Length: 329
Image (cartoon, rainbow, N blue to C red; front, side, top):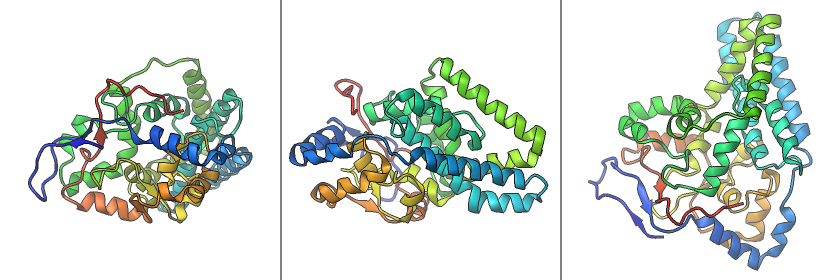
């Protein structure tokens, strides 16, 4: 891969992104792997356990919220961070799984399940997330198309350990609001359905159980997307710590709670394979992945991102729009 970047002094944060003049690596690697290991196609298709796993997480989180209706705020905060955050982040990644239609063969069923999985998160996002996330796969790193890449405003503002720490705490807000400012899409009927059902649940929660129950759900979402071990995947997936690699996998225990999103190279290579089977891709074709840098700790990734003075929002691979419109699915 040919990459260009402005020269910089050693130990100083860059003032531009990494620029690549080749296509994203996943489509070509997928072609090579399938030609050598066609049996991987047998892994394509929905996860038959997805509906059950999502239902358990949704009911457990909503049940916990009702039990905390008269709890003290300190107790709510502690349970939000050490319990609810894991459930809500799990559901966020369930929505990611559903955006690829990996629970049912019929797309509309995945959309309804995504709206259901959205309920404990407190903020309607499942339908909108799918619209932007699929573009992240089709146009990985393409300037103006991939909304997973930080904006110039973020990159110029977040320049040291202090501002990076604030950015990490608030990264879920940046992740959610960035596309609405940089590439707004007109809402459709499904966004209206998602919004209506979510607001109905939120209002019902407040009406029947009080503000503390609703606050528990929102706090679980907020803290779970900030300075939290599971939120390390936001940084680990595509932030460039090695200039010639733009996607990184994580092979650690938190994959059990995150729909194996850590197998991120494998996921981008084969977005039609559910998380529960992504480990088999590495087992079948190990030579394609063992030479790539990978992580074993998302907490360590967050620490490296904050403390490494050369790493920041500019540490992403970008490419020009021309010639990069190939679909990855």
